[in-house]
Length: 122
Image (cartoon, rainbow, N blue to C red; front, side):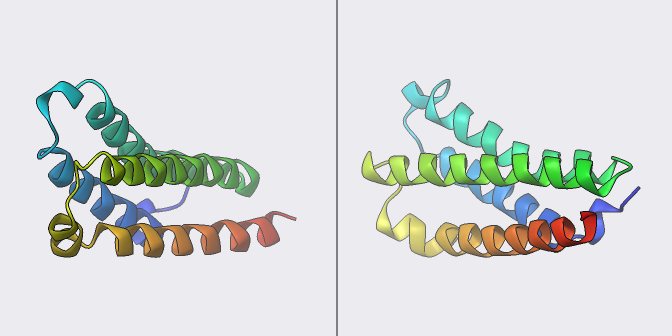
């Protein structure tokens, strides 16, 4: 069993969850059960799938959960871009929170971990 707390991908995913919760507090109330809920669930899913994958015994299972985490991250990225287009996230919010750079860094680190584990699993 792996220690998820030692993975940079998990720590970045955890930071992203906090940022998403902060951002979505500012969304219109009518989005509470729509986009807010979707974004929060997707963000939590990234970190949660990394944790679940770490609890699996084989490298192949670990990679499968990392793939799911990556899919949730891409889903969240789309939802974030939609929130920007809908005007729920202002340019100032994006600068203050630096969410875009968190996405990029998390995506790069998670993708590198997946590639590394795939090579190891073969």
